[in-house]
Length: 56
Image (cartoon, rainbow, N blue to C red; front, side):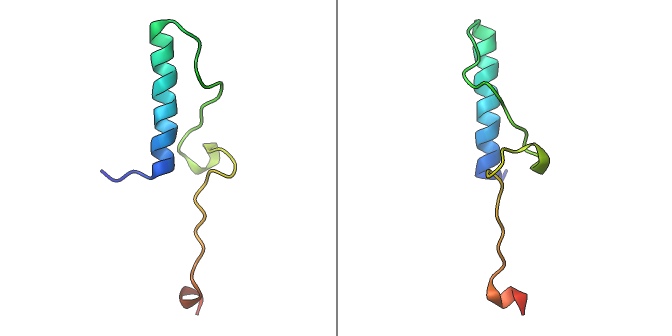
């Protein structure tokens, strides 16, 4: 399965917070983000810039 590295990182943060809850300690991360474009951290989105060849 192919996963974008940023999505994998977001999912790992969620797993770490879930593990903290299960063992009864405070969450390590205050806020988690989703993998949908509108839920991602600003500046954490993929920037796709076309090459000059594709513009012609």
